Image (tube, rainbow, N blue to C red; front, side):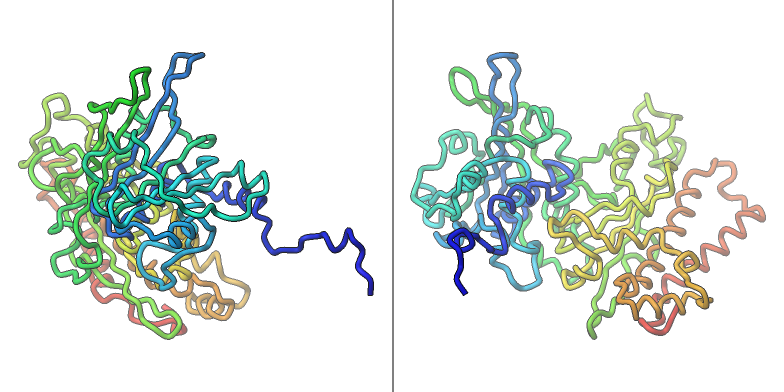
Amino acid sequence: MAVSRSEAQLNFSIIDPKMTVRAMRDSGYKSTTHALAELIDNSIESHATAIEVFGVSRRNDRTGRYTLKELAVLDNGEGMDRDTLRGSLRYGHGTRRERRGIGRFGLGLPNSSMSQARRVDVWSWQSGATNALHTHLSLDEVEDGRREIPEPEQQAIPRTYREASRNVFRDSGTLVVWSNLDRVEWKQASTTFKHTEVLIGRIYRRFLARQSERLPADDPRDSEIGSPRTITLIPLRETAEGTEVQGDDIVRVRPNDPLYLMTGTSCPESFGPGPMFTELEGSPFLVPVRYQGQDYQVHVRASYARPHVRDSSAPEADWPEQWVGKDAGRAPWGKHADQNMGVSLVRAHREIQLDDSWVSGDDPRERWWTVEVDFPTQLDEVLGVTNNKQGTMTFQRLARYDWRRESLPGEESSGDVRRRMEEDGDPRCYLLDLRKQITNAIKLLRHRSRQAKQPRSQRHVLDEDQKADAKATAAIKRRMQRGPQRRIGQGW
């Protein structure tokens, strides 16, 4: 059969590069900080111990204001060879095929970069910064017909970053620079970096914290985290005389622990001695999740505010004078806790999401407790981890799960609903025991929070309501200590 000339010229490739890059720009990053976190992930995966984030602002001649023009991430990691560097800008390339570590689908560098900028340049070196190799990805060039990542060539690292670095440059490392920032939500780095610390500090809290505090003392996984890292946010400003570092606005990121069990964090600690929260009895506890014939352990920790954190009249309280007798929720440490409400999902020691679906409406008292759910990467599909590592779609649906609402005609128990979910392939069926343990923990945490806020004159007096509350608490503790007694297919 003859084929016409016009038909022969048609291109039926599975992927159109131009449309693919345009579509991937809308990949759903919650913020510029979340997109930058993908670059920090790469730095940690390359065993960097020092990571610097730069923001370069330039003066707008028309308005006279400074506007953010470049964002960059520099690390002292292992660096990349020629082929790895070139492949790092390909969508879905990925060099870590095994399901371990922070990586997911090999989308991080190009995906996060194009979500914020029209161009990304990468320099990487393995035998001294003077031997750096450079390549780039440009949306403008893709739209003009470019189909391949340029062959890496030796090129000097931009002077701006060489001079602004706080001694990160070593024999190996990588520098990623975003320019043509058409989707960045920030205006100036100097003001934004101060607010960015809270989120970056929470996402990477275990990598930033003191080694003795990042995991419970008996947790054997400390070696997975490696040496403590430093993350420094450095704002730069271009002037007629050159580029200057805004030294007063440099931020060395501190850990932000939503469990409030670490010290030296970004939380104001002017309430009295010790960490702000205390760990719930029996925490941490392990919840087994059986998936594809294998058991995986999910680590769950829970903590709540200590009495002197919420009550300035408590014996250990040492509040600043202006806050004595006032609502702790309005104090600096209360406002800090307000930003950390919810259940923290941790994967490969990096926070994926702070899920506020478990929080009760707008009740401000919910800030005084936290649950951390730490799961292995083998459960990514079960929890529904998104490819940009910003959410867990299946887990989010658990907070409002009620078997009665889920039941169909003829289903009269939670076990009936669960068996049908298994038959339908609903991934939530693997997580129902985990949900039960989290729910039990939250009930007990809320009770402990109420106790901490009782008037002092009533703290040692148990009326009938308090006795009933204590009895319910004991029952919840027994259920938590027993843990899940049944596996999938047996009901609960």
